[in-house]
Amino acid sequence: MKNIVVLTGAGMSAQSGISTFRDSGGLWENYPVQQVASIEGWHSNPELMLAFYNQRRTALKEAKPNKGHMILAALEQHFHVRIITQNIDDLHERAGSTHILHLHGELTKAQSSEDPDLITHIGYDPIAWGDKAADGSQLRPHVVWFGEPVPNMTKAIQWTQEADIMIVAGTSLAVYPAAGLVDFAQDSIPLFLIDPKPAPVRKKNLYVIEEKAVEGLEKLTKTLIENYI
Image (cartoon, rainbow, N blue to C red; front, top):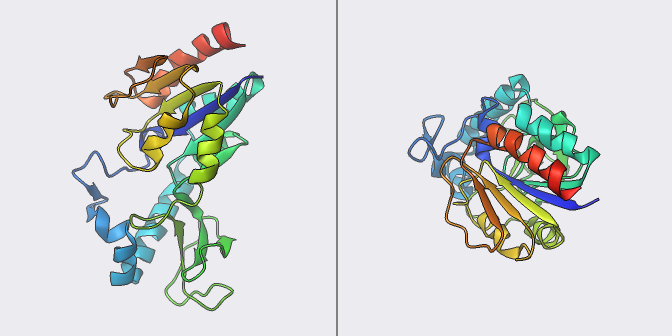
């Protein structure tokens, strides 16, 4: 089986009703991004941050994987599919994909505010101020915020370098370091970029599908099965 690596972003989850912030002037649910998605925001007002992510977790519980998520899961019948996602939701998992790397953390997990490696699964439950990790520190969302390192980048680069085919879906390629992953794909492999407003990418074998994630993946699936199996 050929190795497909898929990089997904907010546009993938938006079609399941998960809100994004880059389409609303830098606001996320009416909050400035730096207030609710940066390490400075956590240090400034941790209780606001906890409440914000509790709301996101409640919304995620009601959301459902869309057809795009299902298409990627179904591709595992024909390819070895690895998904690198910038999204913190669990919709890829719920759709049935089995190899998923979360670059920016996972909403259904919490971590120690002192030790980022001390992680616990909380599902869709809230985190309250005063909830402690095993080391006695305040629990915080297991989310990589602006101003923090991205620990899974090394593995993401490795996956990308091993790809026979790369798909980018639902991401503006505006957030680094994730956006730089396409540079690690071998020039000889096909790179399919799915986005209504695709970012400029310089690759020899670039194929652009100017559609939203779901519609683009619907079109691409036939091409993959007909030409790459």
